[in-house]
Amino acid sequence: TLLAVAFTSVPLLVVLLVADAHVAGHVALVFRILDVPVQIIAAVISPVAMNRFHLNRGHFLSVHAPMLVGGLLVAVTGVFGSICLLAVVIEPWLADTSWAGLSDFLPQIAFFQASIALAIPLIEIANLRSNQRALLIVQVLAVVAIILLAATVSDWQTAIIAFCWVAALRALLLAVPLLGWRAARSDTVSGAHQTAHMRSR
Image (cartoon, rainbow, N blue to C red):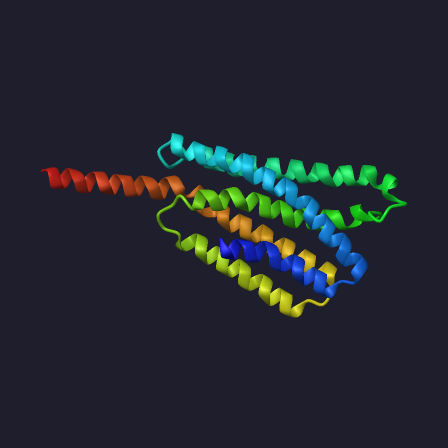
């Protein structure tokens, strides 16, 4: 949990440090706006995905795991893509306000927040596994990567782009163990049944 919070918080702090006051204000505003759909997606999708695991005794059929990851990707892309399009549509009405130019900052930050939203359900599902080693490794590597980037970047646009790709890679790595869940779980269950059968004999 601490690593996940660090990963979502450090990029915003870094951008605020390297950008001027005007840019920093817009970036902070966009982060806060996009944090709302992130929390909504986490609250809606995570329980549904985890319920599918419980209904199937802890694992999907082989065809369901790719469908889950694909469904998450489609839902997240649809939500954040719609927000970016809406920002472009309403931009003319923001011209005389302090929110002017908001759509210029939104796409890149939306990519980062979308990757966060995609990763949250995957982290919740990974928490169901008895072996947390893979999840811990991914989280540690992601935090180390953004810390190294924070120590080297001096331009806010470069920083956001770099953080976006690290967040996307993190989400991808979190999805990989899910696709192999059934095979690992089946082998474990099969081994346990064989052991129990031998003991009963």
